[in-house]
Amino acid sequence: MAKRRISQQQSRRISAAQERRLENTGDLSGELNGGLVIARYGQRALVEDSLSGEHRQCFIRPHIDNVVAGDRVAWQTSEHEGVIAAVEARHTVLTRANPRGDLKPIAANVDVMLIVIAVVPPPHTNLIDRYLVAAEHAGIRPVLVVNKGDLDTERNALGQLARTYENLGYSVTHTDRESDPDARQLHPLMAEQTAVLVGQSGVGKSSLVKRLLPSADSRSEDIRVGALSLGADKGRHTTTTAELYHLPNGAKLIDSPGIREFQLAHLPAAEIANAFIEFRPFLGQCRFRDCRHEHETDCAILKALDGGMISRERFDSFRLITEQQAL
Image (cartoon, rainbow, N blue to C red; front, side, top):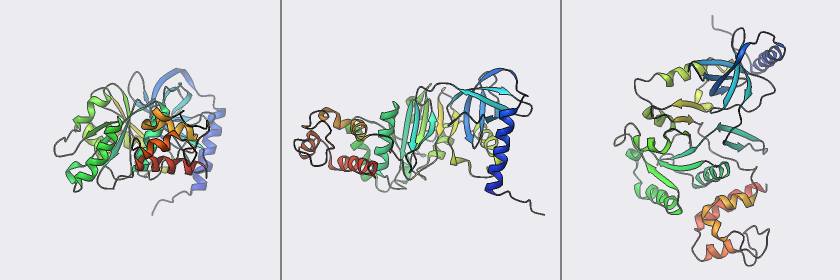
């Protein structure tokens, strides 16, 4: 007989009951342990113990919000599982806004953002620019990774796009399975640091993770098995949340879900303009202090655009982002 599946409403009731038990529990024991969040699923997270390296399923106390991969936490053992009691202060956090403008963290304590593009699916330049703005805002170093070079039938177009960003001053690197099967090109970019992989669905982020991890290393499967056992979402594809992996060079790699949009509704237009690095020499030189760089008289950004010092493509991308902020 097939097992009866629980509904989403029943799942929420179970989670709420678990939270109430946690708030009233008296079975916490021992001192606080340090840990690193590997992945989060609902009200539970997979935590790596700082001393033993073992993975532990932990409930997240109801008063603690927005625990994500990369967070450093303090946790305690309970009768059956661990409980996250506190989250350490982050030095960076990558966030994006939902359509209502509420911020949602994606990954914590990140040093490097690897923005992956490929021929298939075709690169969405405005999405690339949104990632770059988010990286600048968060204080994370962005690197553009041109992936799937072995499938590139439009090498000139993709290469030209990469050169455009390289000429602006961004770091750009290339990798493909044939010439770089272990993705060694990426290793120096993140040694001893924490990197997050971002990009559209289908650009090969999960494939890059497999290439970066040693073939004999089972940690990737361990993480997925552990994550799948968390909560009522058992059996769902695990790339719907960010997951952290340890690399042989001491780096930590966070694989984030592929997305179609990256909202920046929480950022004011002035901050977005400052994140377009080629705008910076001209900012503050407009006649009007509150210039929105649309059609104002003596706008330094518009003059730079007319003079060819700012590309039309990047300016249009900036306008698209700021116009959506006003909606």
